[in-house]
Length: 436
Image (tube, rainbow, N blue to C red; front, side, top):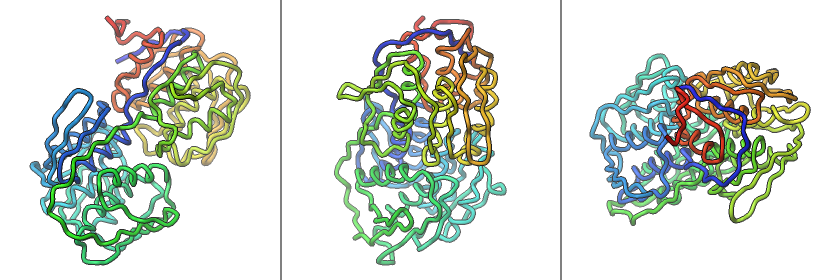
């Protein structure tokens, strides 16, 4: 799919999409919750659909209601010998330890860029927990067979916190009736700590055994009494997505004014840090009970450390393109194993739009451009690249055509529709307007 964005002004109010970070974790917790769970404001991105398919394969039943999903589960009781994670990095990393709670041999697969992402973590860790595993030299497909037995282990948290999320949820289930009085996961060099806060919050809301941690270095699970009782019904509201919301906020600063509703300022989502970046750029931003309102205006180049929130790189590059002077963003090393090598992709595609980006070590420097040019760009099958180019195009000189723009379906399928609701001049494929 091709998307054409013509320079235009935006105005209005828009509801942020549902957070796939929150939605996918809630699906996993609902699978582990022995009883009924209702997820309000559920997401419908490709990654969300992958998570729903996985929990169904692992024994949960899912019913769609208006603005809600009802999930009934008796725990991990697989009804299939294969699960498919689509292109979702969170799903593969979070659900693999949950699959290993079963004594059934199950093959785990995915598609697209997920097939090339390293999964050596599981080859190293799961055998220590009594799980049989085979992979293709650390790549998909993988076959695992449990049951996983919680033990004191040390893991590397430098590649992604998502591996730890899966282990925490699995331990939160298995620590019920576990042999040891206490079981500890020791973590070295943990990245993206706010995502672990989100994981622990979801575990708490679904009644899982939540560990006590000391500075994110040791997570200690205490033994819980064994219970066969059905848990009380759980109702969980899926949060608005700060990752998707960040693109809407930047769009408003480039071509607004825009008000973004549905973003919780007290959220544990890592990408809430977009507010800090906007403040550093001296952006015109106001926050009240109705939402977050942003206005175009002169903005300054800024410094921001995105090590714990690497998904903010794409919207921040679009923002920096319109800032005076240079912007420096730290955390480039976190971008290699995304849907694309995101640092190089941002450099290549924004170069086509007249924005010069330097990469040196763990640092990206974006040189603000007096004129951002419309251009023919490519998403590289990366949803956040497609959105970053679209946002930057809103105030460019001449139109921008984004090839493979359908990549947005991975996380924000309504992205182009929402831009048009705000007044953007957007066409898809043969210049067919979205509302026709």
